[in-house]
Length: 355
Ligand SMILES: Nc1ncnc2c1ncn2[C@@H]1O[C@H](COP(=O)(O)OP(=O)(O)OP(=O)(O)O)[C@@H](O)[C@H]1O
Ligand SMILES: [Mg+2]
Image: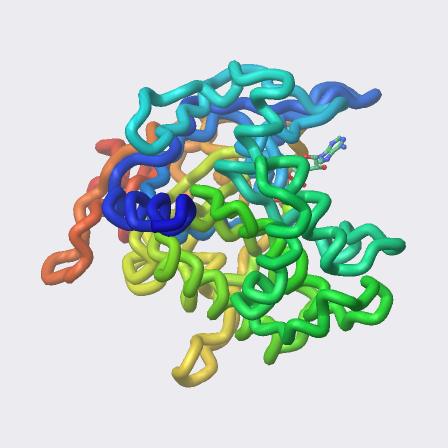
């Protein structure tokens, strides 16, 4: 059996085991007006073979978090604290924040793939598509140029593109085609994890659907773990197994996608869900969330959502709520308990308050 096929079988067997453990991660930016605490204490576990959606309004720290996961944090950003444990197949976990130099480059391409926000413009304008592929593959694996080029039609097929696209230059491709080419390049070495940051934004509805189906297919076919970042809750509803909701640099709720949409716990999650039209149902009045997002240079005290929260209690401006498991609704078919950082669920003051 070919090496890649063997790796795929192993990965599929390992589905459900831990892949990443993010512990109290803090990523800050040095700016002239002070330190921006963009990611400020994120805790999150990600399993092999799952599709995790990361949701939250613009500026809440989604891209800062995902670039740190890929060790692509660059000045003025820096990792201020935390650990990112990665569990390779059949090996001891490693703290990604301690991998360095050439080891890091090799590790990243083999294990982690990244589709950055706005990645359509990341293609080299003077190279044909096939040469972009072979450059990446030669740099990060031991295969010959001939073998690399021979794989290109198949990789293009996996993202729904015809073989002739290999001979085209980026300027000859539509936005959706470029996005698919970048996706095919990202998965060429069959990494364990694909992180896609806003992969469907700025694409028309048809191409959005194609990209969503492809991401779901990668998990099914290769056992790949996918983290998809988008503020578009409809995309999460369609694609994700679990959703992590970020607010002001932290994760405020994580749960099974059905739980998040049917019984959101955190008042912020409820606001986010209220901000999209219901899929396949009647259009509901969009509730939305009042007020503005706070500045990462000066987070509100206690729960950072309290100035905008319709259910804020006195405790909320004083104490940071712990991130704790909360019981599911009676009769819920969702086994996984959601984790929520909200005083409504952890403080006696909330007794009798409508949750
Ligand atoms: N280069 C930078 N210098 C200073 N602050 C930055 C820089 N890049 C991002 N930030 C700040 O960090 C915070 C988080 O930004 P980030 O790009 O991670 O948000 P996001 O959730 O990905 O938003 P979007 O949905 O708009 O992509 C924001 O408040 C932003 O102003
Ligand atoms: Mg972003």
